[in-house]
Image (cartoon, rainbow, N blue to C red):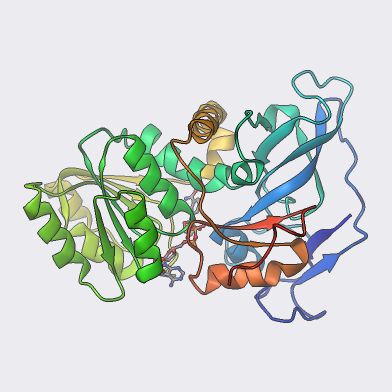
Length: 347
Ligand SMILES: NC(=O)c1ccc[n+]([C@@H]2O[C@H](COP(=O)([O-])OP(=O)(O)OC[C@H]3O[C@@H](n4cnc5c(N)ncnc54)[C@H](OP(=O)(O)O)[C@@H]3O)[C@@H](O)[C@H]2O)c1
């Protein structure tokens, strides 16, 4: 089968990919066998690139698998084979899921307990983009912060994978959503989603712009900060939080881990949530399951949409990683399998 194999750590964005690069495109990797009676083999239709997948190949992610490994976490596809004790799925069913590794391949094997049926009416490629990005934002905003209608949500990196999902979940929840993103194209997309206020960080002062909006709407400040970026943007955003605000620490796309002063958190009664979505699979699997079911139902009802700005084949993965690295992605970048016509670069 076709698969991307990471044989050594390094930057996977070299163009054209060199044989000495960290990731090799293999066309004769062995198809994985069903590993237990409850195992299901899925023919992958679409698999998503998350910032974490890029960091993992660079060797900069918190989880460092032994080499060689097939990268990739969330995916969608069609059930290709089932173990003798599988009761919930049949060959031909459309499913989505996420794994610690292994989705950048034509086939992947999962236990049936890890798979979600993709409902009729849901786009299968969009479903492959859902678990990590939307899952993270859903657990953060709904399960942890209990975001409610009328609260003010400030989303940093708002046109990225997790950011754009947070914006949409905020709107579904009835929150007043403020989005920060860089560049006209990202701003335009956010405005098309009826975001209440969009700040273009390439040419606007974030603090001044948000303060002006809050003043115009007679709002006291931000209730929930959703932060996948870190660095100076976090430091600035703290100035916009009101008494009793919640801070969701999601990631550090800027490369800089921010400091939230404990004395100010005390005086302002802030709650700081560290959130590592993948660890819910071990510690609170029921939360993840409920969350993904709700997201799939929202997707099928059109309450949320997945914006895929870039789509490539497996062999073009270096271009997909470049799109992430160069901050070009608006929403999601996907690897699409078995459909050479729809997997075209938009770069
Ligand atoms: N905690 C969890 O469980 C969890 C789950 C998923 C992701 N994450 C983390 O969340 C972060 C975002 O992930 P993602 O998949 O959404 O990535 P993404 O699609 O690449 O989005 C990241 C966004 O961050 C902004 N950004 C600001 N400074 C940046 C820089 N120096 N380099 C790159 N981007 C920069 C970019 O927006 P502008 O260009 O508009 O500024 C970009 O849209 C990552 O750190 C990832 O590891 C955490």
